[in-house]
Image (cartoon, rainbow, N blue to C red; front, side, top):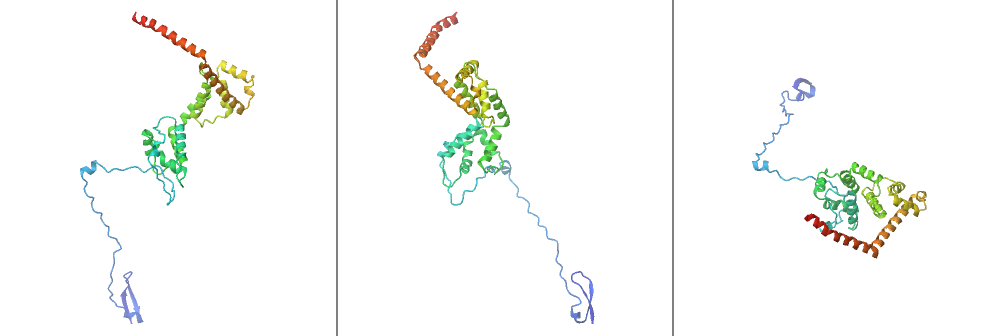
Length: 285
């Protein structure tokens, strides 16, 4: 015996023969929809004018990503530490500020806390005014090491143009008129401290000093070296210039403290006092 039944999956009629004929010829099928019902979001609640005009406060994330110091490590400090820090407002010597800041942080010792973490934690308290605003403008979590901060900081406050300018000043350094050698040499060292990455070798620095001296000072150097200053090594030349600066400083101090210098100073004051009435009379006429 054979019967015709409808296939549930495709809906086609099929013939069933023999033992399969007991299948119900007219089965009932239930069809489920394959299309998911789209949920329409509820309309937004109307905002008041007060909320539109006065938005809630929002802040940018910190640019510092402090390294993890461990779960059992306590890193707490009192406000008095921040008063010890040098301040940078966006102007001044950037290298000098970094050196002073690192010196202060080296005295702050915390158990199981690295020096990098201490510096990154304290540097926001040392930046003020425009430097503080610049720090807040940096991308969030963009600085995770102290070297990374120094690189970004110097790129901002010690650009390449400033380096080129200071290098030119170093290469064209000369002794001023009536300037003693120790003042000249001290001014040269301060200029080098402003640009510690000048890249000039020691022999070149000695050459700049020697060629920048006036005629009388260069004659003194030649006489003290018996004309052999240029025959010295760069180490010997540097030590000689240091020693000469110290000697000229002592000569100046001894001369200022001598009785003759005080008498000359008094004579100069007396001459100025004598000329004052004449100046007043001239002004009256």
